[in-house]
Length: 142
Ligand SMILES: [Zn+2]
Image 1 (tube, helix red, strand yellow):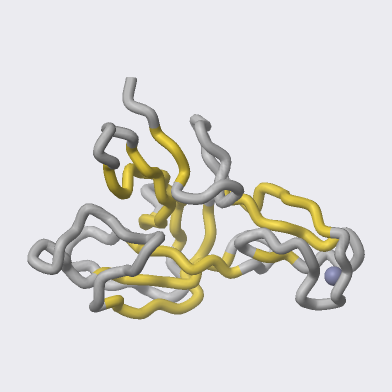
Image 2: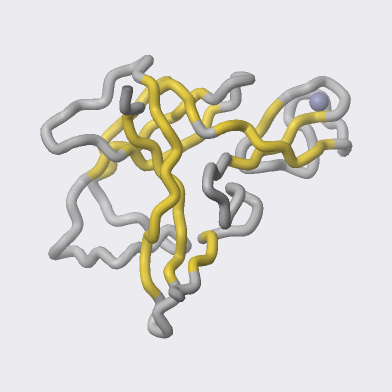
């Protein structure tokens, strides 16, 4: 079986049949962050807990990324195969905003407020066949 490892520890629950993003929540004031932070940006408390922040959110804002991502977000794409893609901030339940690649059907434009679901997919393949897993969001299918 192909080994699949997350691009970074602590970003999402994996392996999982229903993966969720992982963020942190301040034990003191409740401020949520993604990715998880060891201290709170709101009140400065050092007491934060890693918590699942869900798998469905709404699009808060977006842009088109027209240059290749740098390490560690390098994919299998080359300058020849690269195509610009949508990047958005997805607002999760509890208000934390997550920057993510958007996967939209060809020709479809992102719409602010649209419902999006988390997907965890192979992002690139290492020489030994290990698949590096990365999260993105795609429109909710009703
Ligand atoms: Zn706090």
